[in-house]
Amino acid sequence: MFKYTLDNKRYYTLNYYYKKKYNSKVFKVSLNANFGCPNKKNGKGCIYCYNGSGENRGMDIIEQFNKVKGIMENKWPNSKYIGYFQADTNTYAHVNVLKENYEKILNQENVVGLNIATRCDAISDEVYDYLSDLNKRTDLTVELGLQTIHESTSKLINRGHTLKQFEDAVNNLRKRGINVVVHIINGLPFETKEMMLETIKYVSKLDIQGIKIHMLFILKDTLLYELYKKTHFHVLSKEEYVDIVCDELELLKEDIVINRITGDPDKNLVVEPTWLLKKFCVLNEIDKEMLRRNTYQGIKYNK
Image (cartoon, rainbow, N blue to C red):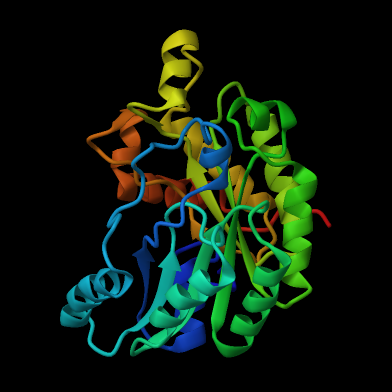
């Protein structure tokens, strides 16, 4: 039996992490603070990004929080909450604006921490210092998008930062004791399975605490959709994706928490792959393949 599980999972789930840490049901509440994105401001942004991405745009931050909390409290009274600043780049503002938004959520009842999703090139020294202070007062995690280590792909998808900038951000956060979660994407245009596994091997050697593994999905009205119409690049089948994810889990250190292992595309916008809309089916297939292989997270991790 895998050491970081209470059920049949063969990888370290976020549910297990929260249950062990808080001995309680914990919900991440997605929040949109309308901070914007420097990559969109300075160019066209990442090619897979839908311009209107992010729910609750324009809604007051406390109203957003209470909307979700009210639903969850009815089902699971006495739950705890993580404020998840998810949409766009959540350190892309003056530090006083960040403080105003973050502290509002921290002051809400039963909030035990914050998750802040951002870009490695959008954290100023002043913001690093503030995050360091926050980390002393709450359970803080900063999420950084990497997506791939391959420069050719990074340029194609217009990530707008270098691998060195990403490494510097991880190091700056970790030297302040801040937990880091890294995002990667499987199925990026023209990447091979070997390239995806090279990214996971690189990530596994970093001093990080969690990872989000995404499947690339093509949305209408994006630059990625235009590229797909022109080139018809290969989109992973469900079987290919499950196989790659299981290989990636085997290569990841066993103590890296798997925050996400698939994706949640908008059914009204997604063009491909439509199989991703059946999220729980994908999760079940991953579990079945791990069982079939009689394998678990970290079994092939090589220091």
